[in-house]
Image (tube, rainbow, N blue to C red; front, top):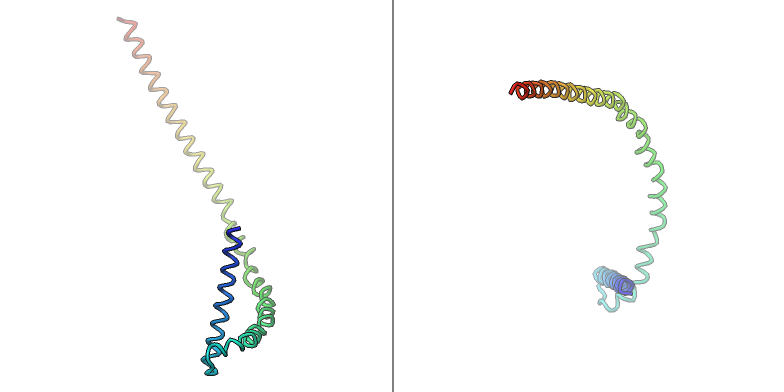
Length: 128
């Protein structure tokens, strides 16, 4: 209920503000007092908003043409961007594979070293 009330107050304020603005403009243009200019507000509002549907049609009739212009290059650009993906993926996979092979080799070397240490320790303990 609070949201509806807030929106109603906001809409009323906007309408009153628009009315006051139009009355002020009419008053400035015609030299009439503000109270007399209030009587001319509906006529002025009709004049002001009579062109809105025509202008809106003009603007929105151009949207499909502009959209085609903007989005016509998307497939070409996408091909350019994604043409490098297989090569890059292959390179990354090879890099991962090489690093894994290096890690396995270091693990084997460490295993052999530890085995040697264990054997040396066992021989030392057996001779005591």
